[in-house]
Image (tube, rainbow, N blue to C red; front, side, top):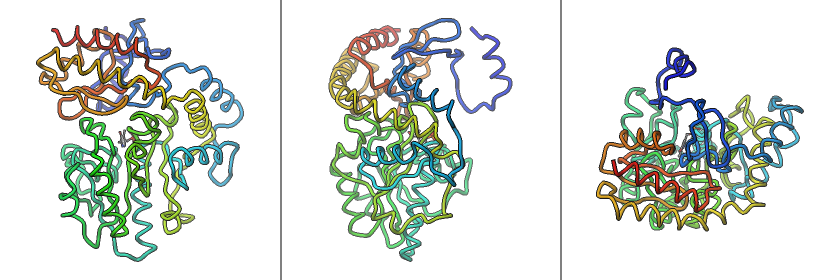
Length: 394
Ligand SMILES: *Cc1c(COP(=O)(O)O)cnc(C)c1O
């Protein structure tokens, strides 16, 4: 199976990914095809990115048209779609001010800087961050500093100082870390990489209360769980617990590299000022066209409504697998961001999945993650479940 394209990659790239020996070529809807023509049913969406699936003609046309006009200018000027993309993203996210980045990690950097800048203006002397065990916020220095996995942090120490880790869904462990130096509390409402762990209502409300009582900022990392995946446009909306700062990326451009951090007016008033932050590519015409078009399609086609319609079917089919197989311990998650905890080595399951033509991803805690494009239909879920049966039977 190892062809010349794979060989060139093996010989020239820095090896930081455990890649499967396949080279993907093109996609259509819920399916991707490799260079040998083999079909894969996609329940990974390129790490929860391609919410609208592959080869969406409308999005493609909008991007192509923008490429022919202009795809980069400096941020010293406005362009046609930066205002509209920002306005729409603020409207659906409930935030007031947004900054466009090129990735999720960069969005986290911006969020952390925004919180520090808020404390600096207020001269509160607050600089510490409380993050969660099992969290994942990215690979850049600030992001890895608040990521709750020792293995990701240790080789790169010393990291950003002033970070403490609390137990996810354990309010007392958060309270024990709060002091007059605490600047912000950062969490994913539904942890992805960390094993598909959903925050409890009580935990979300408790964090909000701690923040309100102490003028601490609540940062929700919606990079993975946002954009409709949990059955609301952003996961915090499902709890009715609004953060002060939030981060987005992955699905907001359907794969065009774009992320964002956003804040309420209350934070913006004291936070970043001209000269405090920037990104050469951030919010370029192509990225903003992607965000604008993706949001337009989301609303017109009621993608969130579709997620709520189809998610119970995914839940039911995954529950069947829990019933049928001893090696499937439990189902976790919500909406179209779910996982199965398996008692067998995940690598085995993953390799078998590739053989069966199914793309899934691993998460911590021996969990197989199911994060399909949000356009998934019941027939695709049936097809996935049948493939999973064949995979688990062996
Ligand atoms: C993927 C991810 C990030 C990092 O995003 P990148 O675009 O890879 O930098 C941050 N937070 C969460 C929750 C993520 O899932």
